Length: 356
Image (cartoon, rainbow, N blue to C red; front, side, top):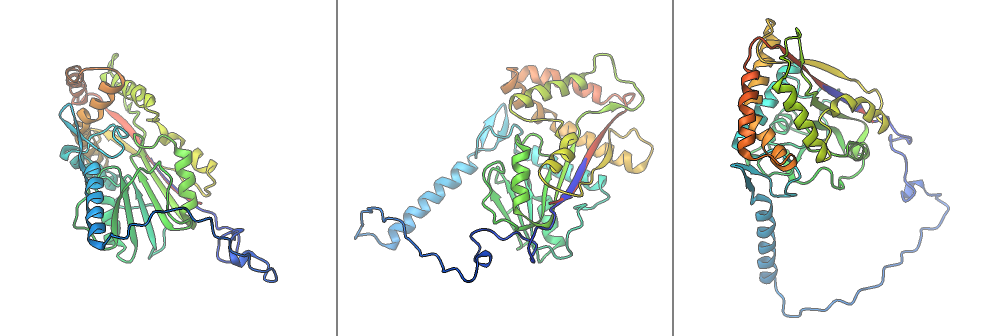
């Protein structure tokens, strides 16, 4: 499901509410407040320093900082992010990165190859991609809008080095305090993040603050609650059991797997207006006769097969206390049910484009 929202133009001729410390908001007859510098701290002076020492220290510091971000963690044969270790339960190795690109293509199929549903300007100034992953969406946005500054942020430095000149990647935790200037972005893009964002109200508050007046935020998420299209689920469905286990493990980490259903309410509570909710059907497998839905279903089930171990391994071993062997045995039965062509599962993607 995808949802978009936009920011209601604020008061003031330029669409922004003047701040108390804005010079233009003061009475022109009032005197300029006197500047009172803070008391100076006592700082010892090193008379022997030179630039070579500084460059050496800086290089050492940056080298340490870089290694702390790129020294990935390995667990049960899978690679995980190092920065904010344990924050995100899915791996970041090549298998998962390939799956991330498959999910992007799947979403392009779902939305008829539209990078965004939000009606942004023809030449937006700045766009922010939250949880950019491999950077594939940000790269395509930068190519489509060459005059736009595109920023992609993620916990893992797994993005390619050769990218369009108007694109930059930043390693950061999107749930930390954002340092972007208020009223910066024309579009904030956030997709497939239910195992990343614990506090959606705070994230949306920060997005609201940093969006331009009339700017848009676009949320996209799988509902992750497939139903049997023709009521053919087996009595003790492994798929249902898997989802129950995932939901319980995610909840222990503070995540809501079914957050997509709440997007519209959360956006309205955050102050966004004209909230539009678009729901797209996502088959699990190629069982539909309709060519478009069949193609979506095949891409969806293939990326899911590729990701089953990565999705379950850390969550089940860390949160449920399973061994890696127990996870692998469970996945055998799950894969068997997912390959059963007599089971016709249908899920939904929520896409919500909206403005403040």
